[in-house]
Structure formats: structure tokens, C-alpha cells
Length: 280
Image 1 (cartoon, rainbow, N blue to C red):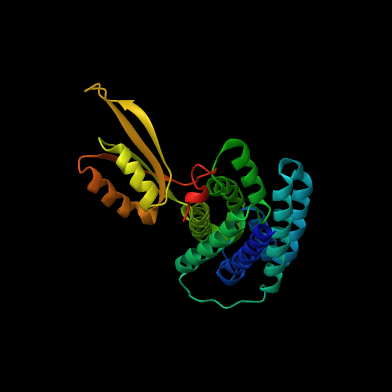
Image 2 (cartoon, rainbow, N blue to C red):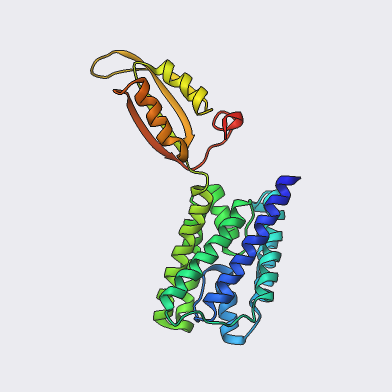
């Protein structure tokens, strides 16, 4: 239950930050966005319709059309995300303060806030609807990252926005959307970045034991044979946090200064083997 409360809180915070990115930066600078929110912004520019209300209605229709493609947990979180984002869009729609006349600066902050907001919502397992629903479906069935999938869908909507906001604002909008997509990927993957370490050493057993004892991490030993020397050696494989990398290098150097060490970036670890009781 506490995990669900935490996820719902993340959705609320993300929806609020997302709404601020739209109402505090994008709209005052007459920028657009991608996906459904881009459509609601265009409707606001043309007819003055409330982005919060139109965002809710369009996303409600999309949820009805695509709910079978999402699991129940995602559906619940997405409905909560749509409602939260729409309410915050409505409550903050009268904020018209323009922080700067530098459109590039405004586009950067619009992208940052929208990306942070969406990233927090995605991190909880939900979406804010619209292209986010489509992006999550693409991510689920094709393995494309959420940020990249959203970027592809958003570019289509931005292309239509060109006829209302003009070429210059369209280019600034592309900057904001691209930056937002990168922030989404960083929040989802970067906050959980681990380091996978492969160590080839004559003292592999000692190294593995010290990893267990000093770093409080699990390690795996497997046999390998050199292609040139044809000698058998045990290889150590472990996954650690970024903060532990320096300590591990010192540890390995103490055990075997000639050890061969390879460091890989790992963006996601699942299962008890990788984390479990060994996670700090």
C-alpha cells in the first residue's frame, strides 16, 4: 500500500510540474508542444479553450479507445495522471507572467519542467495520457524508450502547429520537446544507473570475497579461458552503484594491480540477484 501511495504522490508532483511547464513557460512565449497537450494548446490559441478541460476530454476518449492495450495498474495510474495534470493545468491557467523575452531560454525551461513532470509520472508507472499512452504502448511492444517514442509522436503534432505559430516558434518548440524527451529518459534510467563490473584476475576469489564483505554486494564467478594463453581463469562479475566504483577500483588494485577490469553502464536491474538484500 505504501508503494502505491508513493507512486500516486509522484504522479501528483509530476502533474503539477508538467502544468507549470505549459502555463508558466510554453503558453506565455506562444510555443507549442507535442501530443495531446500540443493539440490542446492549439485549441487554446485558436478558440481560447481551457487547456485543462480539453486535455481531460481528449485523453478520456483516448483511454476509452486504448485501455485494452494497457495493464490494469497502468490504467489506474494513467487515469490518475490524466486527472491530476488536467486539474493542475486548469488551476494554473491564469498564470501569465513572462520571465524573459529570450525565447530560447523559455523553451529550455519549458522542456525541463515538462520533462521532469512526465518523467516523475512515468517513474511511478503511469502516464499523463495522450502521446504518453501511445509511447507506453510502443515501449511495451517494441522496446523503444519512452522518451524516443514520445518524440516521434510529438514531432507529428508539432508539424501541424507550424501553421499557427510560425517557423521560428516551431523551431523553439522542437528544442523544448527534444530536451523534455531527454529529461524523461534520464529520470527513468539515470536515477537508477548501476555499474556492471567484469574482473579477470589471478585473485578472483579474494576479490569476490572482498566485494561481498566491503561493498555489501553479490558477485558471480564463472570460468573463462584466454584465447592466446589458453589458460583457465575465474572471472568476477558484479553490479554496484556509481558511488561505489572508486572504492571497488581501490579494492581490486589492492588484491591484484594487474587485474583486467571492464566497467559497463547498466540502466535497469531487476530481480533479487542484482539487488535484493545486497542493495544499500
